[in-house]
Length: 465
Image 1 (cartoon, rainbow, N blue to C red):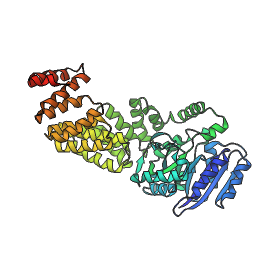
Image 2 (image 1 turned 180 degrees about the horizontal axis):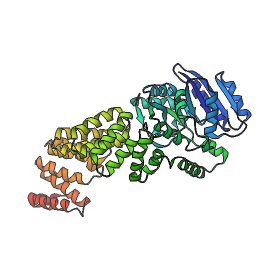
Image 3 (image 1 turned 120 degrees about the vertical axis):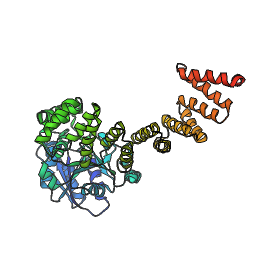
Image 4 (image 1 turned 60 degrees about the horizontal axis):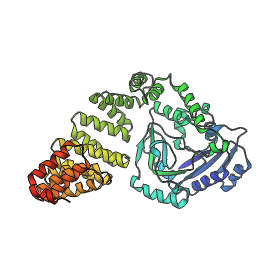
């Protein structure tokens, strides 16, 4: 890949040196040009050109900020692929290869971004400071092997690290320089890309270590005040536009957002988020058939959008289309990125619906997969135990319910009492009914079960201890 890496910087030459070093150690066949846009025009940054012939420094007479500095670098860059990058970062060894693979997988993708330890939203992974060393970044890449080649559609991306093609920027434009030093220029770029019908993706196997807000700290800028100012500028720019207005309203008022989204479909026919906003609106208003159509349309453009997959499956369940939900979420779990608890919750929902339809084998399989996703969730083990109990597989049910009880799920003791009763062990049955009663003193069912058991088992009650 012929790639120009654009790195705006304001001081912090030591950080920039580490960033460049990690780029020069990239694995794979890449022809790199590294363009440092020196917004501070200091000798320490200018000296970094000596690191490698591919490094160029563009000293600026004044601080152009992130947007202005990056734009200067893009105009000066010579290669077709462009990586826009913060200087307080270090790349894992296959960052460029994995971002390139992601970007090249679909011509509708405008920008591909990596996961990072310090970034907003769903691109953040919890690896602490491990990525600060080359060995740590190697380890993190190994950990990410399970998500090799996996993409995740998002509605917007952080400007921390974005790979794109020059032709894409020719269509949507460069960063808007009105956002000054930085913040919300990436939200603005993302929205313009969406309006033109482009996808924005995270490459879940690509990692970038980020120190975080180092330039703002060096400049002595109040980050919260700067964020408020730039958000105000973003609102001023986009509120009157139906697509921009819909996105802004969607955070607090889906009804207003839906009205604007319908209008935006006429003004911006390529805008792919109209169906996403309308789908969410119709889910909230319980018009699930209409919501399902909008979400299906949206997923045709953004096929690995985790949240849309979840909502569409919920619509199918509400419409009693269990097989469609099962098929959709089975595919999603294999192709989309889910946080551990998200995946477990999906499988639990499938298990509950299968059980309500009397499909106990299917319910058990889903509950078992849910427990595998989140083995510490006692509620999931209890659901598995209930399904096994109903299937009269009492020994397996007891194992699941014991895990649930050990995890603090008090109701599991009631189900354990039933299991042991079915196996003829009255002593253990009574013990668990008593435990449920003690743990749930205000639960009338737990109290009634204990009284019924004591009455049925007679003198056995006296042996509890």
